[in-house]
Length: 216
Image 1 (cartoon, rainbow, N blue to C red):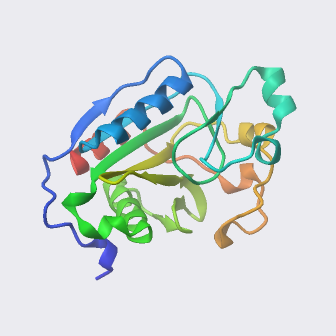
Image 2: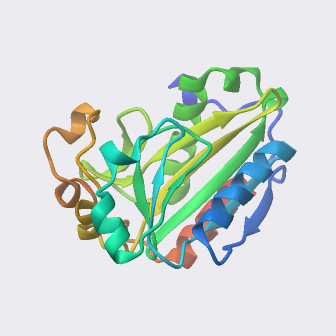
């Protein structure tokens, strides 16, 4: 058995609070995720941005990762989230989830590699979509095309796992707003954004139902 698939002993099916809350502005949604991490209480929040935005990881550089002229011309905000990872485009058709787990529930979650693998594997199982499997260090892929990415942020008491689930997203927009990343997982090879990304064959309400059933 893969160690990351072992269920933490202290976690029960009804431990996590469920939140389906999408705020009007992308920046407000990112701020709410950060607030939930600061509170440190077990919660799974899902949300969707009603407008496109470019979101960098904590260490991202806009001039290297976004096409700033295109973003400015189209009124697409360039924002920064509190978690790590690469730069992404969010918008309609991309379901975001923010999972906050207290570290005292499971000591192994203090290991970033373990917690990343554990969460992505559990999300994969929750989706229940054939041929969707973990890829790279933090992605889920369908037929070797990325459908989900994730990143984490920690405090002394809890960690936040940010994730995306593409279900009806215009993947062509990513190449129009982002440059090719300097660091790419091996399974991506040299594929451009539109060739690398795809959507899950699951409607958004069903995605939410499957996540809620698995975690909450």
